[in-house]
Length: 507
Image 1 (cartoon, rainbow, N blue to C red):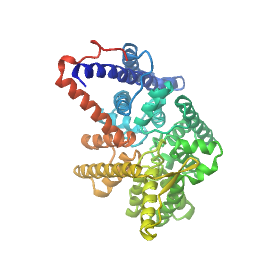
Image 2: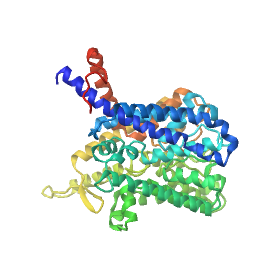
Image 3: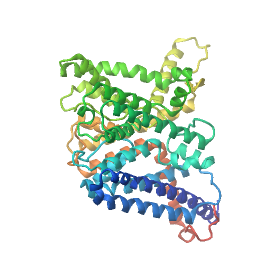
Image 4: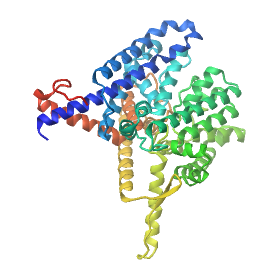
């Protein structure tokens, strides 16, 4: 493509990209100021209102202006690479705007506030906020970020336009499968399922003895697999089997692929029972819980029912990447810590609110390994292919899927080991570094004490980036950064052709 034509093409495309990113920022601004609705219940916290109004209204004004100036006349088809750029821009704005209210209200530095905000938007749950001193507005702000981040702040907003815009962003944010063919209807169904789970959780928690405030926050953070708590001891504060049972149901529902949740609600049991992720989870949960019970909790508690309850709760929390805990990990057996680390690396369901490598990828590798062993045993004349269930149909695991899964797992583990090495450079033990970085990269939120206000800023930023990469999927982050670098390189090489407005055809 000639430079003049390429410049005109890029101007048109980036008008649309910036317009859609601006619209996301406009909508995000509303969520930043939404905790102020609670002032009717806690009017004594009105002094903190400016801390939320300034970034919230600023994001709304800036995003709204960009949308008004650059918005396309008709919906513009968004490619995967362009969707990745929009998602990166949206999350960058979310990180800054989410961090700013926390600096004056929670007494955090920018590095700490950015860490907390990213932990919220990515539904991780690692925290440096002292919840015993935090106001109701701050606690609601943290839960609101997890509410929006769990649903997917880019797709859930822009996919409402339907058509090619929503489809491109769904793929860019790791949600490339729709419940129904129509994108707008699919998004509405996802929001209905998501908010329905949260509402049911609020009622259930309230019936179990939680206050309305605690019930709302914990239901949001359980379904979003986020793990932020209003209590310093998390679920250990209640020490209640009923409360923990409700939370485990919500965590498992949040962990499920939205397609599986839809099939479950529609009564399509065949699709649920045959689903590879469901089968893997049904295998891992009892095995890991038994290992936790034998390795740690049986010796920690005199009553076996309490020991079993803790083992099951911590196992569900780790595998679903939620990050709630019922007891601290100060004196846990190394075997139990290793089991939790494995579970955090595996993670939850794909196209869900959970993080990690994802259960579907692990299941694909498991099926491929079985197939490879079977192929070596069977006669050479026998032709077999590994399969898995997608919905109510069998699908062949082809070479393309195996290659994608293998590349993803390799990159994920490479980033994980690099992050572990980085944490050890700051004096943390290998065991603590393995656990904490698995929690950050898997967007889990469990901690052995590495994450605190005393954590050095470079270590915090490494985990902040890990949370972003873990939430947005490694490949999509790379695609977005490479797209930006390539286009920026063209502008630098051809400075006379730059500019969004000059001679730009309207997208």
